[in-house]
Length: 282
Image (cartoon, rainbow, N blue to C red; front, top):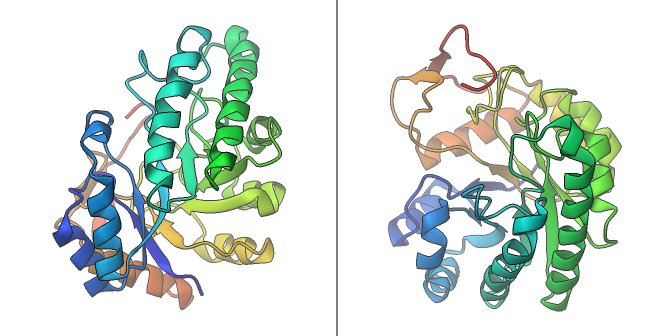
């Protein structure tokens, strides 16, 4: 149905990781690291390992923190944030990466400042999209939870309207105010990549599909109906989140088994139980 991808979030990017992806049958990787590690990325090494193991570098998640340093929606930070992100885009585009996932804002955002933050984010996104276009790349704006910009489809569509080349990264576990299926129907072919993980409809959790409440068969049918043709790319860490109890850490093989079950219209294997009584900020 779809080829399987996995984000590097929470993982060490080295030869062992590429080898484990290949051994398990994971075809694509999204480069995503914590804020302090972007400066340490060895782009030439990632390109060489990608070629050696046949694991495609599908996308690159641009940094979104610390919030007092990077925020394209804040006037006092936008110019420096855009300049910093453009440096990273150039380095990653030079090794063939052509999709860049971006958060349209940090948070919290009060309602009385939302309009101004939205305008500033749109201006920043337009600049980034135009620069990425010159590198043969596109910017994919990610839907976000809680008070962030892009916490519903209407706002995401407003953000991507800032430039004709802007597209959407659909994160399945960020929608706290609308159904994921409805989001996909409205966003349509603007979606060029996904972040797959499950949640309890209370807050983002980044659980493995089957550990939360998403109707995966309905969602995957809807993605097919809008002609989504990217990978089924998971954004989950191997380590256990503090919001759930797992028997053990996840592996690349667990990711592939999970995807295979969903593709076969079967219930994914569950290795966990969520903690009870979780709230919005937990």
